[in-house]
Length: 507
Image (cartoon, rainbow, N blue to C red; front, top):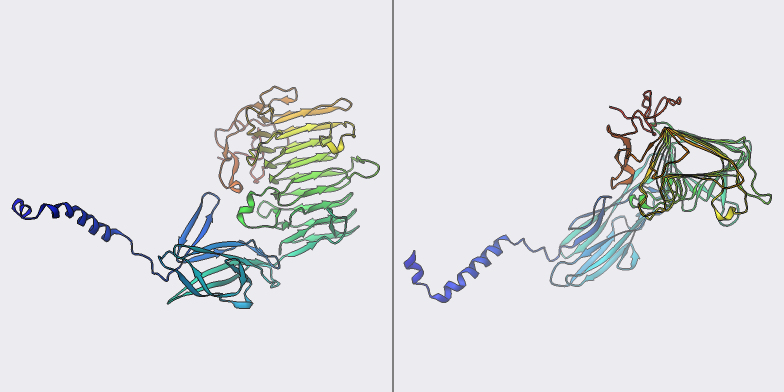
């Protein structure tokens, strides 16, 4: 072997390593794409990761779309990865003019496009929407189509898939600008909403005085921007959800990224004299979850003690402002979860309150929270009510978790704050509660203070899947007092003594 290398000129010996590297690189390099083959890129966002994916095939999926209402616009890019200009002979919707989809190619809307040129190593945008016609059926139905790309000898398809859902639409038809409403239950009228189709509300769905609205288990109610449900003075509202079929109140944009929009609709608003029972409901992504207060008029505010609002086994979450805002009236809550609120979880000002087995856990992170998870006061904090004098408040909390993630440099020193103004009485007590508070309080009685409740998973990226049940090491276990609430929010029997909060730990 040594004699062989001696016969090769030194110049070729220097070239030999280069030749070997070129051969190796040539054998390992992936094949170049077909010059006529287009590549598509699109955004993947599953709540945990966000990335662009490029491929020669693509499916565009839309979340459920209400019939007669257009979807959000989705987009993707069409790439020319070659080193020469490509002309796409034709781009068109396979469904043509009958398609429920609409497309826009590089800023031009239509159903078909001819001779679309993409420069080398360049790309174009394609935008897609879907508007689905009603089919008068209860179950969701699949609507498909495809965008066809003809390039040279290549035909490529981008598949389009969406589920359509027929709905009952409630559209405001009266009232002043900014407070447009539709009466859904008139005086002395009883109306029942059922689960067979969802309800989509534009404006305020209003229950008039002496009217009654009954909402059956499993009913889904979706509100457009700035819309809400309004239980007017002396009306009646019964939300009859169950553990397996809760009643859902949320915004009407169903695409998953709207789950991070905590101001999709306005609120459930309840006035004086109304009798309201809400059981097994999920109230999410509103500006305020539930607001209970008298309706001001030219005579000021009328306070009446003959109204009662009861909320049981209900989840109120992801609100831009407070989860529950109540003033002057009577409110009772049992086995409820109030979480992730930009304002207070509970903002209780004047009136009478009985709170049993609540979990109020505020880990709001979209902006800095400057108010406690629970605020109790005999004075209305809203500057619009500054001329209204203090009013008595009687608030009793039993077996409640009131916790949160207020920053250490914040002025908040307690997640349970009681404020007393001169001129009215404050009766407030937190019995057998687990409270985050750096300060002792005369309102705390047999409470667990400043101990982490040890929720199962409060930090999950998908906020809708966060778990506020208790771990086996939770200091809330067995620290409650028997107050006659025998089942938890999941229907589990409570021990004696019970656990603090909405959830009983189950081994």
